Image 1 (cartoon, rainbow, N blue to C red):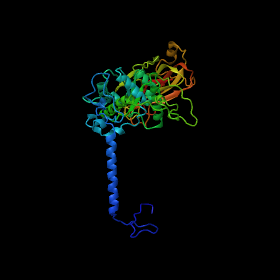
Image 2 (image 1 turned 180 degrees about the vertical axis):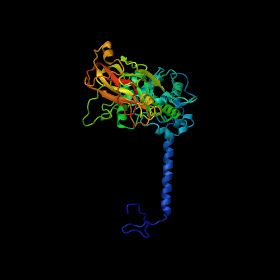
Image 3 (image 1 turned 90 degrees about the horizontal axis):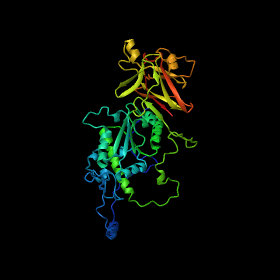
Image 4 (image 1 turned 30 degrees about the horizontal axis):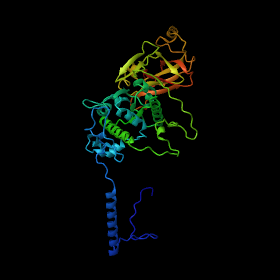
Length: 470
């Protein structure tokens, strides 16, 4: 019939099936007597067994997580935890204010805990009273967009709780609005120091659900985990500043307990099987997320070099630029910008491959769609041509050849890459990562870009925010 057919139940059992008859079962006196006898024997045996066991000490508790024991002393001297008890804060103290979310929601907040080896090593350092350094990588959420006082950013709320346990801890925040894993995989060392103990990563808002994001996440985590000091890295979500902070606090408190409990465990017996030993648990996986396990290719070490208008440790400073290229700032973002076709800008970079970050929009903003052509040409997103230039060209030679606005370069002289910042399919404006070329000589090069007279939006505004090379 092409639809859903409804059938009435048969009035009698179908052929080949046994009908199910409802029967009430009545035990005999002999059966009842046997059951009572078995129960008596079990109770007698259980009483004899438990009374023969040594009494467990009652003062061994996981008080490490209770607020009345968490003093300002950075050594956090507490009663050693028992091996048998749970380290979950809300198992030990359901009345804790952090437990208001419910235990099921707390479990769901942890997508992947890993072995915990690196985090325990960091917490052991903190429990010894040493100062630990925490770095926070994130975008607009971490920057605090939309957080109105007296509400706190998630990292501030979490760190307030963390410092209650470890007062000597120090936090460094590297927030870059509208940035995702692609940006931070190159630029994490440009927003926070690369010698910290613990890194917290919040990038869910700007990371789309795609295979590219998975690869970029893999590169970012490998870059952080591969640092010489072998830091711990935790990836968290940005669902709400208070909830994100509290969930992270609950997880860290549980891991503090686990760190202390590991010290009470007996050493494991030697193993001969194929599974990794404890010393291997904090090693970086030999295969990347996208590697083939059948025909794996060697993974080249990541040595990213980042220059950006938004990274204070490695600011992007042009070698030279046309007069109409200016450093523009808006909504905690910045870029070198020009709306004049023919305007050029040059940067030096080192490496064999180079990519750039440009500010991309869908062209549907109020000014970008202005009926006045002059405003639209100035505000709507445009495109640029970029190329690798001769390192030996002097400043005077460059000014003579490229320095004046409107002097478009001869396209026959070199290879160009067109970078269009107008992306109609984008829902919101964002910092776009554009790979230009690879296979260059691994040395210093000059990247030149020129605002193009071609446009798909009616405008020519082109904004470059950073250069990534390796």
